[in-house]
Image (cartoon, rainbow, N blue to C red):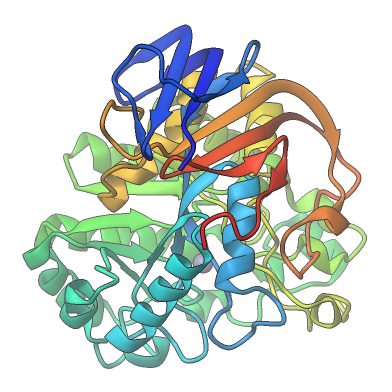
Length: 434
Ligand SMILES: [Zn+2]
């Protein structure tokens, strides 16, 4: 394995508080102590940021089941291109990842692709049906060592089921992650409920569909002591619930997606199915609350909710198109363009949101920090580079981005996974790890 020296970059490591110009050496797959590494490939990082590789808590890999939309390998490549060194694979596959055999399959495919660490999430309930508990303990003890459990795509409707799942998960300190959505309130909803949904004649999903379940789960997390993670927070009310819960000492964390801190319901004026997501794009006041929450620590992490869909599915009429959009290859640039450039938060906080915090929530050793002797999971990025989003260049076989043609700031230049270069000058090095 070749060694590297990343020379003269700004080293940003929120885990240690380090923020200084210097060199980072990689030797035998780990961050080297210090001093020159002989025969190393020198990479000029002048003017660039050297940060711990990003960790996405929320990736839909679509394998097994919809390999035409995405595979573990293509999601891994997209992740590496986006500066990630780890992703958490959501369990709503076909079959559902509700047993050890399925999470081990996804985990093994991730190892085979070798571009990022793939940590499968496990379903809370069998078949995501919200009735019978999935094999939680078995998945935690499997080779995949599942640490986050969720029925993402659905909220857990039965409060007693939610309580029992938390009571079980707390015994091995796993995370209960919720897609907060009251199914009865949201039923048939196509977009955020607001004056615009009335004007467009589309059935609305009220903010309360999210907030009621967030409030319930916070109460149950307090009751059981279980670690709770709220997926894709989209409303001001949920941000406020989070703030109060943290003040109360509840063990709760939350994530927000780049599309929720970038777009609002105004994007739906053209009935463009690419703008259809779940939870839906909300109003400007909600978007602003999410930005504030990301800046002040109420929201812990930026997660993509990367959701590939085949062209023929997104080409349907708005009401028939499935919700979701791609996220892995635009997350960093949207973070810099929407949050850092306008001065809402500093770059160090952006790195914390993309890397350090999600690694900590998922309990991933060797991710989210630059530490001598630890696996070299690193990203080198150019924070000032301007580029235009071209979906045809994405690693995913799917193309459903809301940002085609948009000019963004901030680009991933190199990525290293366990000391091996997975991205060089923006290009994914396929097969580098066979
Ligand atoms: Zn979800």
